[in-house]
Image 1 (cartoon, helix red, strand yellow):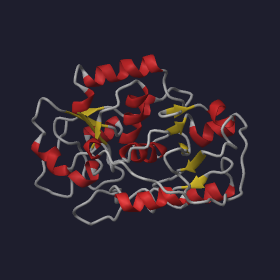
Image 2 (cartoon, helix red, strand yellow):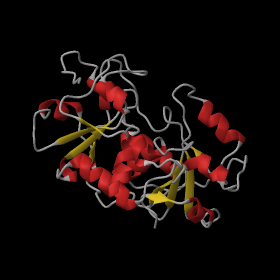
Image 3 (cartoon, helix red, strand yellow):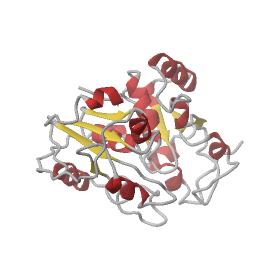
Length: 281
């Protein structure tokens, strides 16, 4: 079973296995249909496509939710069933390169109690670099019945975050770039800054110069510094909209810290109420 990260070499051996489902999560904020267009042109054989906005997010309520609220359990359960996923299915997810989008679906499956899910290390970019097999054929899928076993304890809401900004027993971790955390730039959301008391841990720093995840020892050292003796069960990750924070959670799982939490509304939900404090440096 693969339950965190899978190498391209390992995926090659699974391409034609009957209990393996591959999901392509390529997505670009600047071109929201670009990922699907790329998928339709070429993808890993038998892969199906997941659109971040349409499939992996719920309804946006202006002034209340963030940019990518979690979908309802009913919506994602129907989607997973239609993709041919049940409790016996090994799911492999990938995106354009870094895994920040794919990690969203990885975490959602964990949230729903499905352990057999892994992110392709290096994504589509690395798969192409090793001349992995590709296809433009859209797979016909026989639906199965996905039975969720939700882990509601893995999520916290904005009210919880508000009440605990000064709670020393908890650690808030901002997964965006350091410049966005510091409030020096904000290319996406209307307000810059961070949630008060949060520390910075940009998700891209989980990767090496080759675009692949750091080895377990390096990741362990990275998160030991970030957590600074804080229990992972008392650590809450967020980002701009609850997507790339899942990359940090994936890295944490990969080194055995499986009980950290996600604030899915993240920064884009935090700033919907102007009464909430803004952290700056």
